[in-house]
Every structure is written in structure tokens, then in C-alpha cells.
Length: 49
Image (cartoon, rainbow, N blue to C red; front, side, top):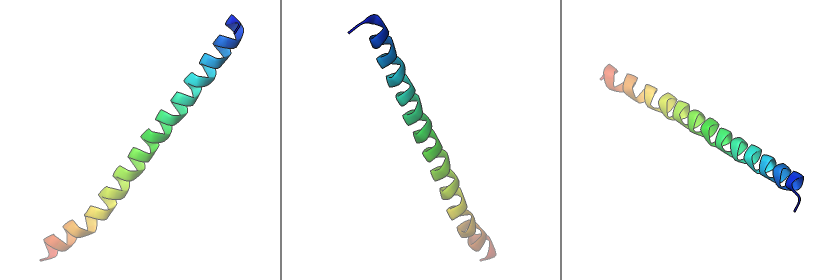
């Protein structure tokens, strides 16, 4: 494998890793927001009691 091909392969791999990590971060944020929204009504019900 030539240096150019190796560099191209490395760049592609690095971009894929960044995309995967970015996707996981987005999923974590979305999941955290969903959990917070799910717990809010329960807290309101507890306060009403």
C-alpha cells in the first residue's frame, strides 16, 4: 500500500469514527431529553398529591 493510499484509508477511518462518536453523542442527548420529559409529569403528579 502506498503512502497516499494509507493516508486516504486513515482519513476515511478517522471520519467514520467521528461520525459514529457524533451519532452516539446525539443518541445520548436525545435519550437524556426523553428521560427528562418522561419524569416531569411524574414529578407534577407527586406535587399534586
